[in-house]
Length: 152
Image (cartoon, rainbow, N blue to C red; front, side, top):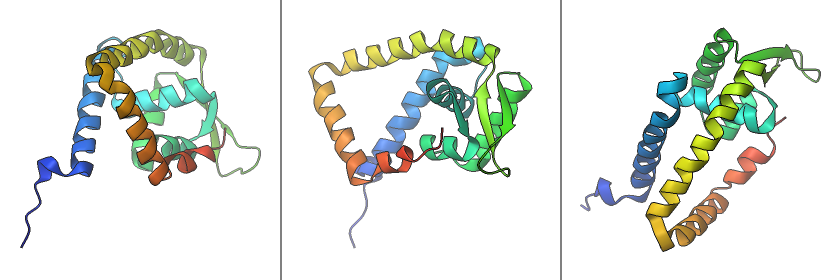
């Protein structure tokens, strides 16, 4: 019987790398803004798209609805986001950042871009082929299709 070498198994490696990078990136925004990773993802998604439902955020960020719900609640308690009923579906709420939320988002963005820049610099010339490989994986697994229909 063949044995799986987990450390060499591509899905496992991709997941570990993503988790490690996310945790490392948390050191950029966490200490100053006291955000969890899911809270950051909700904040960043709303910062980019301006408004979206919790369901849309979950689909866009590949987060489970429970994590999205907890993050939304935490950001709402901090007065960083607000909810309003959807005009298309009254059962759904549209989320937007408040002025405080936008301010925090705008404070974090330059740090996020600098973090990404350092990461790409560390990869050196290998960055471009890696980004192309990631784009290819996204196409294979239709990642873009899962986010294109996100309602804004």
